[in-house]
Length: 519
Picture 1 (cartoon, one colour):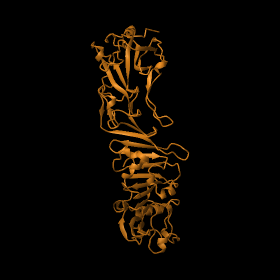
Picture 2 (tube, one colour):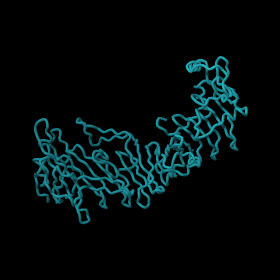
Picture 3 (cartoon, helix red, strand yellow):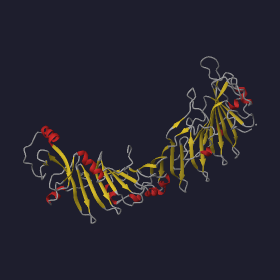
Picture 4 (cartoon, one colour):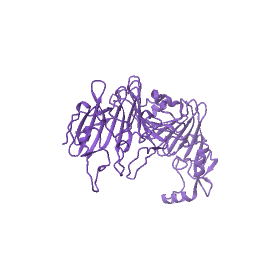
């Protein structure tokens, strides 16, 4: 073990010469490579939803001069913390010097000897591998960590003051006027910025050079929103060894993000309710997810509570139209009322319900029931009154009802409609009093007779000779087609393709954007 006197007097770090240690004036500690590394911890949220302050660990009071071992170690620099104690202001990693051969791990005489008397003693045996400089704000809180590494390749023998291959801000912590953490970026191995001109004062939630986390608070100091963003695309310059070069940052101007909003009020079990969100630079809020129905309670229509699958079910929101700023998440998400929004949740039948709200609306203008496909679409007027229902496929018994037989018995429906498979559409319209009328159905017709193919009325036995299943399938493929029109059999459209197009263009069936991936 190499031990040297660690009492030496100037500023801890020189911004213009990041690899140069102070010649004298501050306490130093030498630790062996086998010892716990001195590093830093960035802010995090504790169980009380408070944000911790960054810290350097182990603390200065726990650091004792132990010297290097055969593989090197760390040199720790201490300065006054202004409160009668000491704090770490710089750490240097030194490694064993080997020269010659294919495995040389030092500059082999390319650096200049340091002026610091302690470092002069270790310099013949070890080389400087990495420097972290720690900078504090006026309140004594850690605000910036800058990482520097020397350049060993090449034959240039100029001053060590300029001889580095990396000098970048590794981590930033910014505070508000109350001393609370409001932004954090970077970490060991994921620098806040590779641009040597970047400073932590440049950090913002709009310009995202690397991953950045923002915090906003309730008046009592508890966290309200945690917003984590990262560049959508990031390319960095590389040297011939594959190392990212200083100044190599390039941004596309886009970022993606995710985060958590902690709701002010917990549930009856006093559990803190969380809303998770995704966001990006172009659209702001993209989607929300929560197990609390408390978010945007103004959108909770009575039918929601009747049809929800359970109290702790997953509730989601998407925003398929206008860009929605993150500030809309404030005050229990009351701000989202001003934007087009889609609220979706699971029904007890297993179907998923999507409710589409127009900007400023108190009632959904459309409600969709879906399994893999759209099974039921409900349309409403501005006052929330039902105006139309479109069904496709079979009716879910525990979700909603349909009584086609009643229409047949009243003489409105004069053929057997399709209720499953392709083109099995039924359209019901509602007048101002809520009275229902069947206005559109689809049916199968026989090509040879040009008449409806299915027996009518369907609840009575079919007197026609029965074909085998295989023969029926073959006959259906070649001799049976699809038509749609009024319940009395007046055709409006024929063929599955034209039927689908009509449903989209005339009735808007399934055309509303829901903010789902791939739309």
